[in-house]
Image (tube, rainbow, N blue to C red):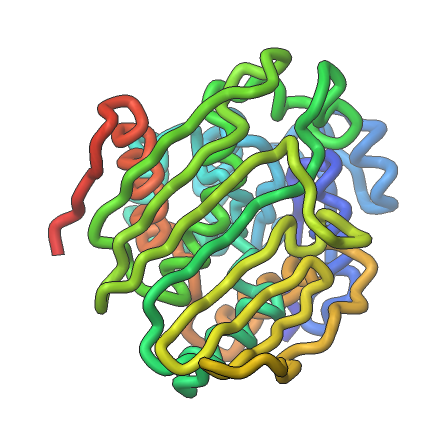
Length: 338
């Protein structure tokens, strides 16, 4: 079986989607749509500037929505109206929690499945860390720290060359970026029981927050800290490989994630380190996590393997995000019911 894939959106990040689909043995690209028809034509696929027309002409099995949040709901509704049962949608998923809940309910009513393209949990270093934690390599995990340091947020030209809409997002650091680690922490540690946030805007050329701390209370007494600052960098040749550094600290050892994608284990009380995962050699984005996610979706459709990040499950990420903004606004920790 080969899936017919159509894509809507041909902006900066779409290159990783199209490139992945082109390498997929059990998927074939049948069309590209963008409001700028020249961008759609540049993909080399049958090009459209009208999504409804593309869906009617190409009758795909699945639509890959590679659009910013304000445009996603309309695209998904057009796909549902065309009878599609499989949709992938980029993150951030919809403009806010309310819209995400409505779209998810509409898809369920239509018997369709939406997979949110939340790909960071598919990065090879987080898969390796998950395996190490499951083996008990660090003993009883106590705390996790991730330091986001992509170094791309300084000055009036910040983000303009790659994703200019970043500048106008009223909610930025959390809604666009930290959401990756909300989902990744859920994958590694389980759903949080509470969150506390202290956010700020440093670059006055942008609309939203671009730095801050988020403290997560996870099950079994684990605390996780997201320490984000888009102005600062970290020690890496490619600052967008991991976008920062992490520590996973337990009673018997510590795992450290470095900016080159390598993961090392240091036993408690020891100085030497063991390499758990060597430096990443993929020259594209994030350890080829886009391809890993899209292969996962194809396997789920064709082979029936369980999906990660179905929209219904991903609503938990949206609710955590909303609680983070509430915490920052109210200046106090927000708790979730168990």
